[in-house]
Length: 319
Image (cartoon, rainbow, N blue to C red):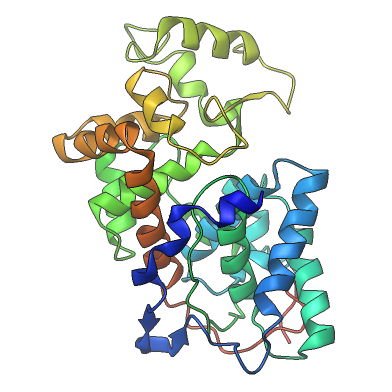
């Protein structure tokens, strides 16, 4: 495991000096106020992984879903209150998990540095550690986010859906200041994780008036998915891994995409324009190139200003 952290990707020093002056973020934000912040988060992520290999995928997805709604302000962590449903109870977020990892990190940091470390920063750090501990790159995370006080389930409709085409994906990403390259690169996060049948049923049953199955899919791969996810599927937990190595952060996602073995319509959409297809080929050919691009895109996404105003004492409720 130590070799992962000592990989060549830990020395992308250009990342170390990133500072987002618009909201006073810096990579050494807690250097004097809570130097334990990063070690504590890394410890909790590692502890979670020991008991559940799906924790890294859960944390990475959670961070994405947080930043794509109201910016990176930990609004995804808030619990619903009465009739006011929060983001975590919106349809696209029902399957989010591993919230307890953030809770445990927050509890320990509150005992060491009361009222100092935001839940939004904990989530950003946890996503980084999830990638690194799964064999991917590590990077210095700009810190200094504040926690938001608003979380609405209806806002989850703003998330990019697995059925999106390339135009819809580009619109979703560009609205958040993310480029075509960021789109292809961040989609590589699908190298970790699992999807329930409902997210890809459109490709394997009643695809269109001429084809029951999406003809761009590898036939054997599609056949396997159809067996796991029959049209009248009654097993709610049924689904498929997003790539051939779902607990390892690597470039297998891009290789499978070129083989017609992608799960989502949104994955296959990356092959529908020359610029995005070229990036898919680039990342399939070079894991190092993918890792370097992923670091840059993750930092860019994770610094989307959430406009938070407080440091929550409990990540599930506002102060």
